Every structure is written in C-alpha cells, then in structure tokens.
Image (cartoon, one colour):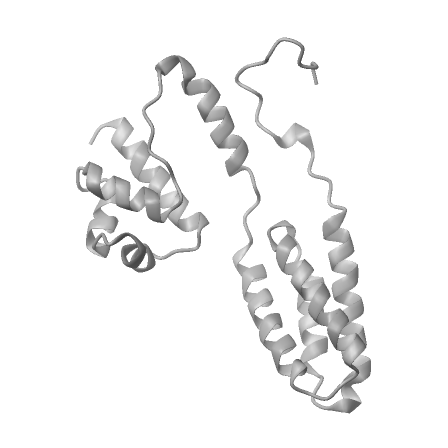
Length: 194
C-alpha cells in the first residue's frame, strides 16, 4: 500500500480513538463491517470511496479535494483543531465513578443547597475534563463523596464540594499558551507578527 493510503488509514484510526470509539462502535455507526475497519486501519486492504465516505461521516470528518498549493494552509488549520488536549483514560474513569456517586448522593435527603453546589460544580468539571493532567484532587473528591451514606455525611459532601470547586477554579484558569500552537502556514497582510 502506498504512503497516501497508509496516512489515510492512520488518520482514520486516530480520529476513531480520539472519539473514544472501538472498531465495533464505529462499525455500528458507519455500517462498515468491523473486520473491514480492522483491515483498513492496518493497511491490509485498499480503501473504497464508499467505505471512506461512511467512516468519515461517522467520525465527523469531511472528504475534500484541494489544490496542492493550499495543502500547507489546510494542514495548519487541521493541526490547530487537533491540538485540543484529550481526556486521559484514568481521568475519564474517575469522572464516570464520580458521576455515579453524585447520582447516588442525589437520592439521599441531604442539604439541598450543598447538593446543588456539588452537581453544578461537577458539571463544570466535566466540561474541563480534557485539561486535567493530575487526577489526584478529582480522585479525592470521589473518595470523599463515596463516604456519604446518609444525612450524617454532610461534612463529607461539603469536603467533596470544596475539592471540586478548587479543581474547577484551577482548570478554569489554566493558561493555554499560544507557543504550543503550530506555526501558521500563511500570514495575511496587516497581521501582527506575534
């Protein structure tokens, strides 16, 4: 298989993994047999346009023919979209466990104001979960909320709320530095030289 086909296969595999899909999940979404997806990703089969279109659609990708002169600009734009940090697997696991604990505690008759604060803060943390690189504080919040079993658990619930608020604030103020961004492939007249 040629270099272009291998690059396309790699792109499809990375897009599937970024979406957190297994080959079986993608098969169900795209209507392409899982065994065929496996062969495509390992460059073991030539990719048909119909399969490519189905996979691209399921992965929220577009197929486009562009002039060669525009390739550097398109690649730069594509890289800038791809630099969004991905949620670490251990963070996703803790987030899922914390979601279950928040739901469990919701059924208990505990201070509604604190419970609402926990739920609101947890939803905000979920929005920033791809920025969490050290899941220790998140794990501590989950452990604190696990100890809440009845109305006597108000102290643990407040502790969990405080940990999540601190984490949320750190995440909200995370500085994403432009120096980490890829260099632009072009510059328009009048652009500042940053």
